[in-house]
Amino acid sequence: MRTMKIQLRDIDLNRDQTPLDVVIRADSEGIAICPKGYGDACSCKGGGMPVFLQLYDGQLMLSVWSDINKEDPTHDISLEGAKES
Image 1: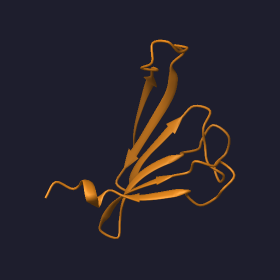
Image 2: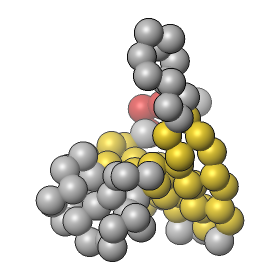
Image 3: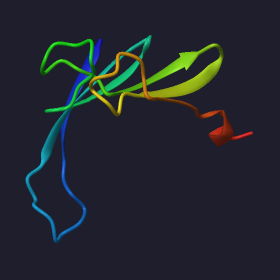
């Protein structure tokens, strides 16, 4: 597994400029995006991944947990329409 840490900065210059720490974990099963202070229902505090990119059933899929109280993703988005073909 590969891990990368970044800080996101708000691009709206009129807003608070406190950056958000984000950890990105990647392996052959997918890419997890883990912003500090955000999570999912099944992970321990500080270890959640509200965004996950994976290849599933031959399709590139983006799964999002926009509600920390729900175990299953609230959105599963096929990116096949974005395929360059």
